[in-house]
Length: 391
Image 1 (tube, rainbow, N blue to C red):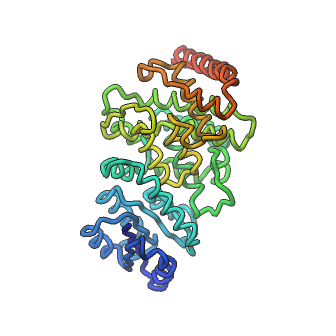
Image 2 (image 1 turned 30 degrees about the horizontal axis):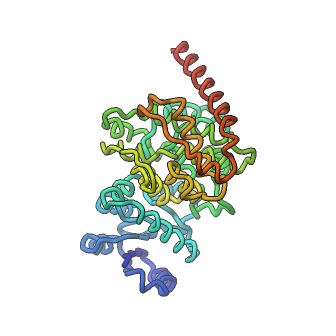
């Protein structure tokens, strides 16, 4: 049975939430508290799967509760409820939460988010990996990217397009931006999959505040501890995969989703490297550890499900898209093509699932897609040469 802890200093709110979960009593062991201190004491003795806390409480507020849970029980899914007006006051806590919801909260939306997290949680084999993914509030970011982004954002003449172009180079900041804009705090009518659309919706000031508050660049030193791991190389590969994937469709909305999924497809490798854990490539039905870890983390963060599927199945697209060409297959193709161009990244090329491409009727386009990949590789080499000359 799954254990849920709800914290809110208003008894009426607790009663309302309890009524919402009454139908789940056979599946959920739910406990309700008005004080964060009491809830944390209970959780210390009773392992908890999901904690849901209000933000504005006293004497211990929701931000303090979320931080304590992250430190003491990183495998617990952290949800935040807030009725506060203004994102500035809620952002620090939102960065600690896996997902945030506005009060009054739609119970169906809440239950779907919780169940979705657990469906992916079951695919992550060990408690150690669940705790690893749950402990991270953000991914490490390359210092050079962060420095450039900060410089542009401090330029009063810079526009959102310039900011978005830099953000698209960085998986960590892109993830946080998409996570935030898709939270119920913004009540977006439909899922946002584009970094540019997210930046446009949030506006320059909020994007700047998000980037500066997340401080994702500070985690780079941890990622560097894994022998042979290069965050810069991972970022370059993710960017190449994203750009190739975006060109595999003429549909603008799909192209944005393909790009985001390509950028994030290997985030699990960064997660594993950040704690010095290796990743062994696997084949067949068994997912590579980095794919499972990455998909689980992005599920917790509320990233669109199609992107999560691409991260979790980019080595076995047929498992997620047996009959169609979508984001999972696009990222698989782009990833393999990128590995063909960058065999030095991990010492071996990846196998293209040509049987799957044949089944869905797109195998004949493979050489066309290879030509697209080569164009991006040539462009990257030219940019690298220009950068070396400038240095």
